Length: 344
Image (tube, rainbow, N blue to C red):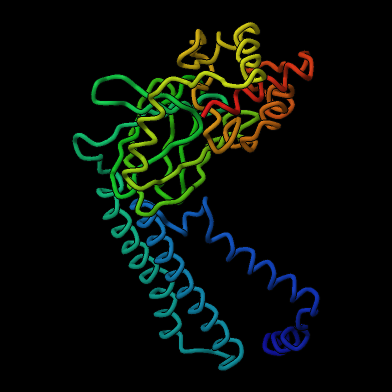
């Protein structure tokens, strides 16, 4: 009775409809496309990410081996040799395949995974570049710590020299965030009242995307940032420029935007070095026009996007602490946007 039921079921298995088969193929191609890109752990551009990707492929290989083994045994039992089997052989298969083999395989993976920990957790050498990153709601405060003790502060963007191990100091003043740049290293939590450390060692130049990997509020999905890996000479020039004060606006519209920025109280929250604006609550805007995005990866960095962000802040990013200034006349918003966009 059991054999006939198995044969009956197998006989009634229908092949996939051509349209459904096309969708399955498309889904597989989309999943493969996710293996690359600026935010893929399977397209490593850092020493830590290389270890994580290697461990992943070992796990996939082991899982595939087990899967094919189980499917092979199932086909053998149900199709190639149905019927009673030798009890001693069956018991050995159950004990060996169900207990001994998984224990050996998982123990091997555990040993291999633990062997990666010393390199993943190793700090950067003494004298390396140090960066303090604070997870705010919902943006990233980035501060480059110089040997002289003075810091260079910016927001929502980190630039690194290729081939150098850099030490990050991570913290949060409000809720738990999680710092993650999949292409460069693993993720680590940012816990209020505690400073966690993470060493990054990028291996190739490019632009990579990072994000907060711990739910932290309504705009959690809008809390992203970019990591730009540059040649060491280019990075040194960039960092020196970031330490400079903002250049004075040259056009009449930009000068009007600067005056509006100061008269509307924006300087109470934001700093623009070289002007009276010295607020510490919000992001430092001294060179905001040179960054790749606005509002922590939410908008592109263009003049029109500055205007939209200033006028519709709370609509674009729920629970953000910055108030919207949509009550200002359109010409004032335009002047503010031109001024901020020119801060390069």
